[in-house]
Amino acid sequence: MTIITDSSFIYALYNTKDSYHRQAMEFSEQYTGRVIIPDVILPEVSYLLVRDLGYHGVQEFLGKFKEVGHSLEPLANSDLIRVHEISVEYSSAEFDIVDCCIMALAERLYITKIATFDRRDFSIFRPHHCDYLELLP
Image (tube, rainbow, N blue to C red):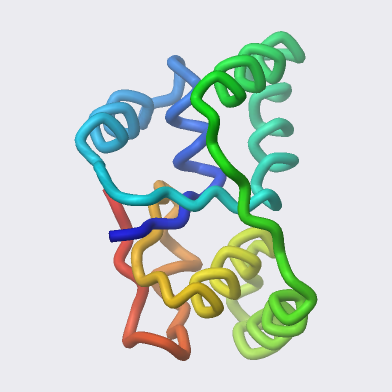
């Protein structure tokens, strides 16, 4: 099983002060499948860490992140076209653009599971490749 991670999951995983940290750690310790981390989430995670922990929080995150050896999934030009389509189709919901990017990646890579604690946008979205996205943990 392959999952895509959202900013909220990575933020909780690397921020010991976050209320979801324990849940993120437990899930990541038990999960044995492939994890895809969209490169587009890094600025959002960094922003949240600076906001809540200061710049040193980003430095700690980057140090730990590189040690684990996560690989990042870049957006393709076709993803950006789909991001725009999703943002227009769901304009009344005002989806976060990073979430739209993750939705487009999920469709392109045929992934049905998202690791996130920010469930609103992903619960509303109806992807082309499946009936709905399964939200974990």
